[in-house]
Length: 336
Ligand SMILES: C[S@@+](CC[C@H](N)C(=O)[O-])C[C@H]1O[C@@H](n2cnc3c(N)ncnc32)[C@H](O)[C@@H]1O
Image 1 (spheres, rainbow, N blue to C red):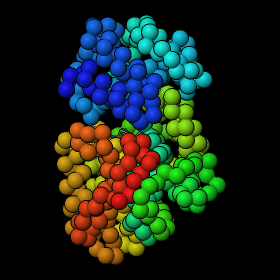
Image 2: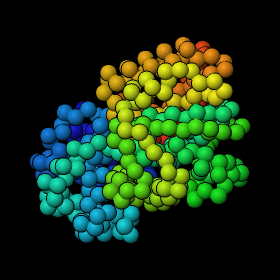
Image 3: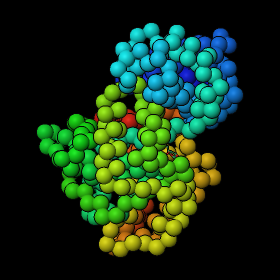
Image 4: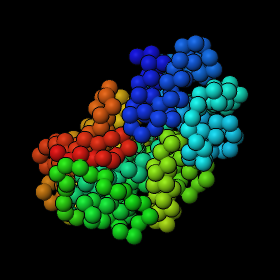
């Protein structure tokens, strides 16, 4: 697919999933790319970048960063994340791209670095399916917010699951055959080659820049989760998934289920890294026993599609089940 087609495909998804502003911006950016405008100057060096690295969201994140830094006042007028009102966003966006081209070139090289708290709605339900005490290991944990899965509140059918006092509240995030039981996380650890620190102003800026600017509820959820993380001092280790798993899965652990969780990470891994992660999990699965079970829980897109599945593989046995279909940012999670 050409780069401009990828911009349009992402635009459609944004428009469909609650961000008409990002949709409008990306549709117009694709036309501008075709016309050889500033978007072409900015993005043509990335025409061959892998689709999974999502150049469209690198562009919108780079623009949003300027807005959040209060350095693009004309564009900010249209960004609800800073009090603006959506409207004719493209003329201002085009001028902003032309004015800040050199700096934006730096920023669009950066990978998309989100930490989407809504995905905890899938993780929490997945952990209910697993049951019992859990040792939670997260691959691609970013700022580690979803490692705090049990410190958030989930309002489900009028009941509150998780921590009812939490400032992070997910309102009716589930549909279908709702999982039941309890979640008990007794140990948690995460890795990421580029971990973010929830108390660093620079890292908070990075995280918020990738939130779609007209999705103010996601913004509020992220800010509340950053506050919870600052209180709990969660640290993510600077390691790729394979090195982390090699160490963490070297020996089976008795008395807990070791759950390896990842959400929207696979597409950002090099193919060899993906294969190594699969291999390490399969090998550790062969060593797992009823007293030291292992599970892999994930929320990942179906390759080449904008559909997201929650899948669970459990060992001993290595049985894989699709537990739910979700949205890219989590809710609604439709349990099967
Ligand atoms: C789109 S973000 C998702 C972050 C988080 N899992 C979430 O759902 O909010 C993708 C993350 O994958 C991380 N990543 C990329 N390559 C990785 C690797 N080899 N091992 C672990 N994480 C990786 C990136 O640094 C980034 O934090």
